[in-house]
Image (cartoon, rainbow, N blue to C red; front, side, top):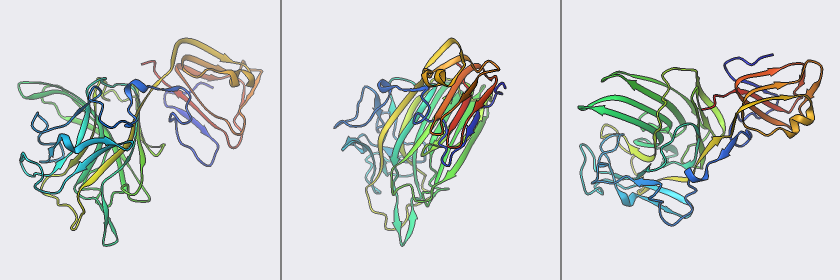
Length: 347
């Protein structure tokens, strides 16, 4: 059996978490491009703190001023603070609320697995969750322009909550945008999932797997939206943003909201795939399966037509190859095991 273009998941268990670094040993942590936010100040080599003045006066969610002092790091957290009205010293086009954010200085990012753990702003108003106007985001973009016209805009919204659509803070949304050609139109795609409790009541994980042929979006380790083999997916290296935006003056905060409010981030982690792209591996028995060194191979073959290979009932195995994955003979995945066979390019 040869695996088709789309990934094949053989999951025989009650809980399936997808191909995250938790259970996919092909991923390796990229500590140099990650931040645990365990210092007493923001790493300004890695991050530019959004500030006004300085080109960051009005954020992309509406008319809200980013202020350098509203992005701080302490107690093992990145703290992006939203102040009440009238705090921002430099008025923008519609509002003067102050908020905070950071954008990567170096590196610029491309393929890999991106994850934050975050608790969002919001509160309980008269027994009802309320987070309208807030737009906490975790996203990436690339732009080129000429004479005021955007020639190319690539954007991946790993996590983007709209203050319009998610007043109760229970919707997770991710997606991507692509614009190519002089003043061309956008080609968007995206998906949503829902949380059983408000996202401001606990820390949750928001993540993306980005390869040259796929985008997979995750909430708490569970994939909820994916796109494969789409020729207009963003391909440029991008800057990465973690920021608290607000919708414009057409939407108001819930009455009696206590200020300040915070978008709290416990960590940002980047993972890269281990690659052995010149390797063509054949596994002939269960012992070879146990000894296998995980990385993206050129091709993988399980069996030779006569041998039998079997997972253990407790095994969680994800295999990746660029050209082909072939099962040749008997391969047993017993109840309780989890097997993923994932065509993956050598980016």
